[in-house]
Length: 273
Image (cartoon, rainbow, N blue to C red):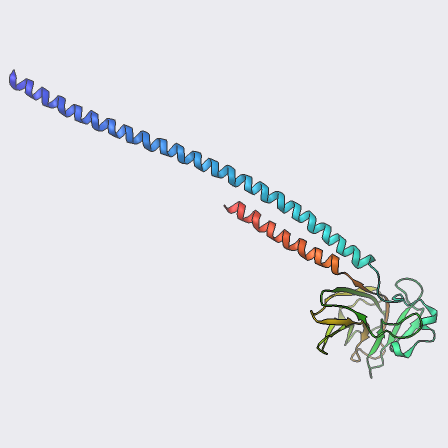
């Protein structure tokens, strides 16, 4: 009986040890579970914060896009309706153009085609020399040398061209030329050149360019040109020439586009956070 009691006591001690171990494991499991709850709560909080940042980034991107759209609309409006620096870019003034002042180029004042009004400038290519039309004519029939500028200015230049339906368009280029004189005595030649083979015959089409002058620019002038390499007999009409200072609207658009790019990057970063 004594032996059996001792064995029973030993088994009881062993059982108590196992119970203690089980309790310890239960406590550890509970601690782990509690840590998991805390981590989950922290993760939820971070997710909420990330969502809030994403919403803010989206809102800023939408606002930046709206600002960029307004800046673009403003720039287009200035290009279309801003003050034209060219006197009589539509070539309608009879006193200026009749008789045609040779100092202004090698064109013909014509009523055969017109983009607007009644007249345009006609170039019939002879193959021996280029044809040009200065845009610097003045009301008193003199030729202005240039317009003053500084290194911050941006200009929009456009003109409309009508290639005759009978043209071959086998060779050569037409162009808008805007040389910019600089304070160091040099000249930057900004040329918007169009291959005649890309033009549609018998249709008025716009040729345009934007010029951002060098930081040491002092003056700018403009003229239209048909190269001597154009096929002999091909005929072109030019009309409605415009030179517009677009600096303020142009700079505003550049700034708005940069802000939009920054906002879009923030959206991307927020989405991947």
